[in-house]
Image 1 (cartoon, rainbow, N blue to C red):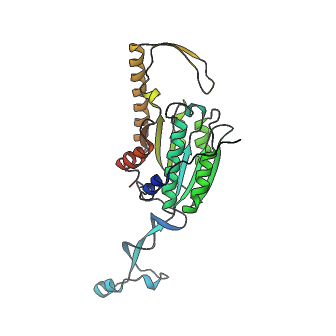
Image 2: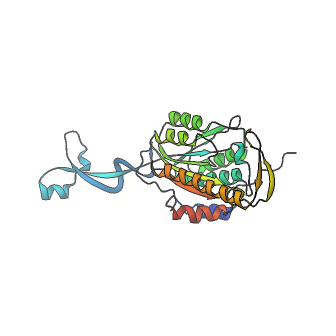
Image 3: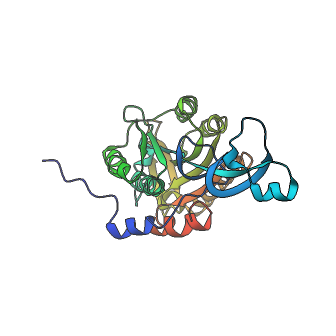
Length: 295
């Protein structure tokens, strides 16, 4: 008998998510009329600027008070409010299915929280999970009605075999119809992570990298001889864990994370390290608001 599917969140957390909104670092073009600020000019209630009247313009947009002062025709311009497509890329490769708390489960719930916040703002969500043999996509759900298919999709996704992260991101960048905010949630344990992020930068995405690691990776508590087995098929490695080797591991880890952060900073990518030891609710409600991702 198949065990019942566990809910991603309780109702109390969902009520807290209802109070949040995704912040964009710049105005983004969208598709259709929605609730998001756009660089285009439209007919919302938020005034933007004036421009001189030219033949063929709509007389209804003329500012007659300004005409009385200037004796010239000017049109009122307003900020358009348009729907955004928010892109979520979820790493469900085998290396994510590890740690306590489990990296994949944490990342899946984090993507669910992001998606719910976006749908509550009446924007559109597309989510891609990309492990070989297990990757699939949910395209273009919108509004609160999209919550059920989004959560069902994420509850069905399971960790799969290794994937070529660079190839996945390149295909996604080529196939995405629109730019917009893009959140990638991964442990980045792929030697081609730089190529992957470069391919996303080639499109008009506003990229946020959620670098998910487990506490056992960040602060290993080991002593003695161990045989490390690569979850994605690499050769096993024999190690002796002592004070010296753990210090070297920590230096290498810090250097690697610093390299990723520096790479992202130089390309306008927001880099956010994630420790799964921090309860998800605290990370979303506190850390992401502090970093200016949510408000």
